[in-house]
Image (cartoon, rainbow, N blue to C red; front, side, top):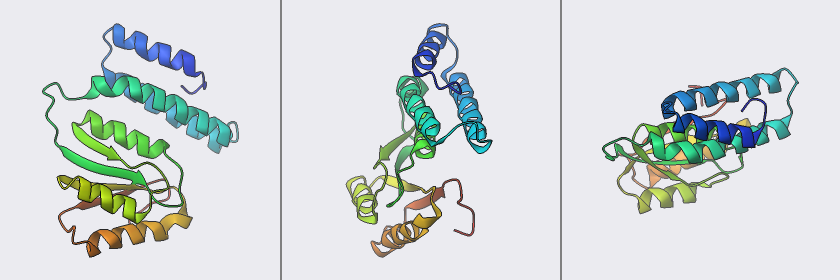
Length: 174
């Protein structure tokens, strides 16, 4: 994955699954590859286009692995509404969280990227059994969209929904 060769990465994942390698081990190796891509970007060896390519490869691998990561008994631990807030189109982190939640037996309702507060509220209303809202934000310029979404959840009376916020620059101060 870190070499940005999508056909090789996909073929290797399929091969490892056929050989009986645990999907969680394959996912861990892919995460290491993504970390390496991030490091190469920070070091100036990779560019934004390389990050986008690695994200595309990761999505392809996720599509292959996700069915193998579901719990054996098929029982869901619950629903999570997930998305990247308005003004932000980054989805690598969101997609990683989606895979990890799916692997942990959660059903994920992914509203995508650049989603405004109304999209999140509608998804929660359409899925009243969703008790977690996971918001992704990579751009500090989108902190207002995070706040607006959290405020909208509260004003809609969805007090039983737990809110999880994540992203590169996100800390407890947000």
